Length: 484
Image (cartoon, rainbow, N blue to C red):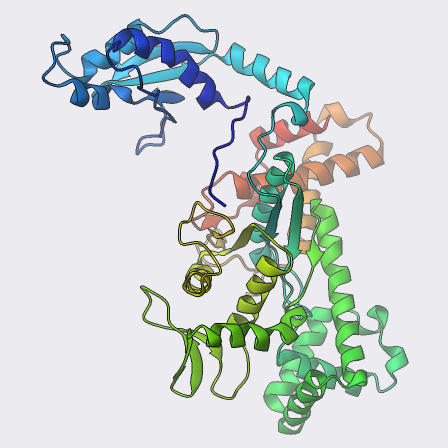
């Protein structure tokens, strides 16, 4: 399916283009097919923007008219003529010509306020653009089972949820919010072996008995690293789990259920909805997917492993390891094939840190080699990787606690709420509020501030997380006024 640009009546860019159409017709009557070129203004190196939008037609028009008797001495003169012929418009506060004919446009604040009011009154159905696809899948958050969510999951969860909300506003017919859980692998052998040692009676397996799953994981890891006999039993447990033995599968499912219940508590606090589908779902699909790729001649032997080479990359995708086992690349190949051919997803979006960009880029290239994705990136079905930088502490290193532990996401949210509540209680405006009102406001402002702190910066760069900056008076006042 080819990409089709969607008209959105709320688009400022399109409305400005209409304003400049008349000016261009008068300025260059001999060029009736000229189309207004309108783009948002970029900030300079100091981060300052001198205008909101820019008309960029002058340079191209001057080059096209060179040699003709037009009277224009340069692109700046063309830009000035475009400005002079621009009709009066309530949406434009002011215009000026800069550089080689760029017409800088400052929007009217009054018009912006009226426009926003109109959009809110009309409702989303009146103006949201409709995408040329029916089914979109956003793959985000994706924590590992038996490990608590930490601050490293924050960006994927917030950015992914924001994208999903944008697709919902765009009225995509089917939106899949996919949580690709890490629910399979050798670590489950040590977890299950430790579980059986701790609770010999399977009826004792429950969330209350296991308690802190993170501590349970650490205890099993210590035994795995230091007890050869336990390590052997853990490895045997993996084999028995993968062979489908009921006792081991039931224990694995119990661990998964407890983990997902903890994840859901975090998602509820953040107002995030997700549909969980773990790596294990694709286990039976991996051999079929690799067979299809092999039949197309994409898989070859390399140093005992079965691999796929793609254009522009020296290292291959390892589809089957030397020992005959599968890895996360095998799973991602099967997952993408299933999404394209079973779920009929037209736009697959993966939200992970920038360090995984090459991995996904190679998977997408392998699918293009197979003919399963179009070569043109603006055609559907397509895949997009949305990368983001790391969350750093104020020391410039990965955000951790004083004891060098990774900060748990629950702790971060608790601290955000605590600080917001303390700040609220210092204000006279809340002296007549009930405890419930203060609690709800502290949650809304605190969690909202966490989201805003993440979304306000360039997603591709690392950013320093600071509670003081996140909850400064200016940001706090904005959120508090919204909540009130």
